[in-house]
Image (tube, rainbow, N blue to C red; front, side, top):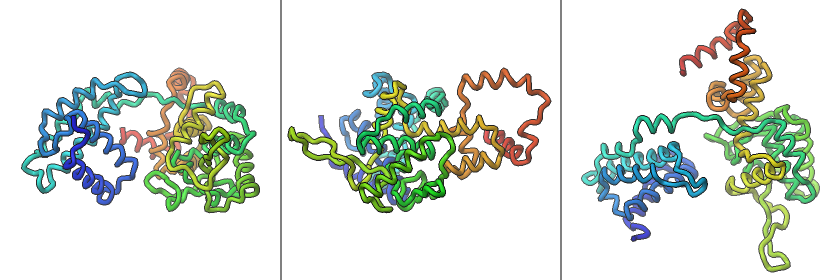
Length: 364
């Protein structure tokens, strides 16, 4: 079976250029689309895209429904299947408009990549996320060692994520100059920090973990005083590798550059939770943790808006709808306790909260 098709490779190169330059998609999105196309080509034996037929889409959809995830050993989730099929549908819609393909690829044939209504509903369904508690994160920080510079970096990384809720690629690209310890905030400057949608905003350290700011402050002092790092150098440097006495590569302290991907950061979090004998929680789950904590504080609308802005959300609705899911056990407690609060003033009595409630209802 062919490993690749030269004609297809040229078409894919043009499509990736289109996604990058015309649609403004980031490298992660383009990489995902490339993986989806590669999966489809493998299923067709790398047939030329000019020979595309709707039955190929139907057959591929069937195979995706039966495919096994290499990571979990289980069937691919409906959400993963839908994401792959969506990438392929968009590609063939684009291809049907390209010179040389208009007579070979029908625009409507791309619709055969659609999931059934039932499977699409399953793919869209929201399920309870695995989110750590603040007590668990405090326990993780207490369990993390700090004997070596790499251990101190790792501990500071987890502490910084706990008090900022920064996204994983922002953590990878922060520089020392972004942090103002005296004012207690970090500038997420999209010119140099990989923020979502290239937003620029300020994050004030969240008052959620007493030890975390001290851990971060000690790390910044070490970078500046012991390693002579300047404001334009990484806040969390990558690991420097070198040859050990046995001739094998091994860690040899910190490098003068940051990480190029999120993989090393996720691995640091994984090791930290394992050391604390807790299940793994990924860096993004810290954002959910901070929102859930805020929802227990009985904040005023203005305070909740400030908390939302601190996470980089332009609209407080994003905070509620994307991160504000109430855990199932807490949902039960709240519902059962509503009877005791009948007749009390509710959030609808506040003008701002009333407006928010109306918008939530309108958004469904």
